[in-house]
Amino acid sequence: YHSTDAIGNPNQVTGTVVVPEAQWSGNGERPLISYAVGTHGLAQRCAPSLQMAQGTDYENANIRAALQAGYAVVITDNPGYTTGDTPSYMAGKAQAHAALDIIRASTQLADSGITSATRTAIWGYSQGGQTASWAGERWKDYAADINLVAVAAGGTPANFFDTAHYLNASTGSSFLLQTVIGLDAQYPTEIDLDNRANAQGKTEIARVTADQCVFDTLFNYMNKDLAEYTVGNTPLDTLLAIPEVNATLAEQALGSKRIEVPLYQYHGTADEFIPLDQHLALKKQYCHKFGNVTFDVFPSEHIVTQFQAATPVLS
Image (tube, rainbow, N blue to C red; front, side):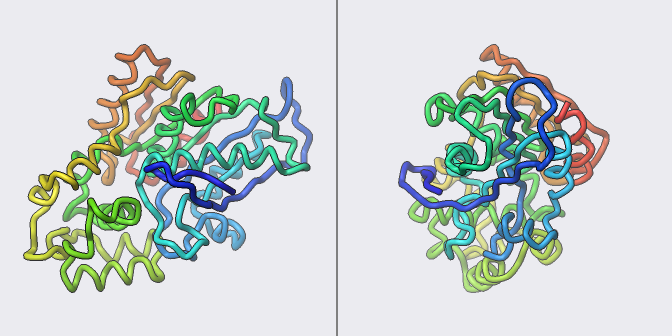
């Protein structure tokens, strides 16, 4: 289906539409969830649609819970998957557009039962929390024809500077490496990996994008410092201070616009990948704009929280 990347260029994205066979038993027509996935890895084979078709997608439990609750569910692959491109991982606007445009595309499937009047919610966690939040902020300007009624966003990386420091040389180092690669795919002049990655860095980039999915990369790059992969072993703080790099990361910041539908945010208190404080700061930004915001915390680390929260999200 057609969509738009983070800088306004048209692109093509793939995804999946799933509609329960059982009749909807609630009021009105069957509602819809646009489910925004978390990190899947940067290889083409990691695309959600391909993993769902094989029954191996780690988010199948949440998607199945939404289907069992009666919702139709659409799942974007996000830009760059199944097309042979490098996924523009963590380019927030591009992901938001993809999550909104698959809703529009689903209305064109004659047997989906989905129309422009269908009550629609967006649900995502981690990378998906970023996508869902950006989609909530972009909705009125980009896709006001969609009948959006709610957003649920968990484990959200709202501030890339705080999150980068939290991830670097830690358990979740792989997510920082993938973010650099993904942002370079969308902003090649600004991130400029061609000139800022050293020989080892270019080797690792090729490995990550060739055949590694999320858990491969997670374990292979645990506790790695990004400086290992930069020309002259440039440290993270120096990289973040480069004006064009700084501006690109700042552009991913959430909270500049009010989300005009009820927003449910949630996070694990023991999250080892995405810092809780920066997500709480985003909540305050939305509250200062008089948004309708609920924030829950769960006594768990990152991955467990994703599935613990499914019941309150769906309620």
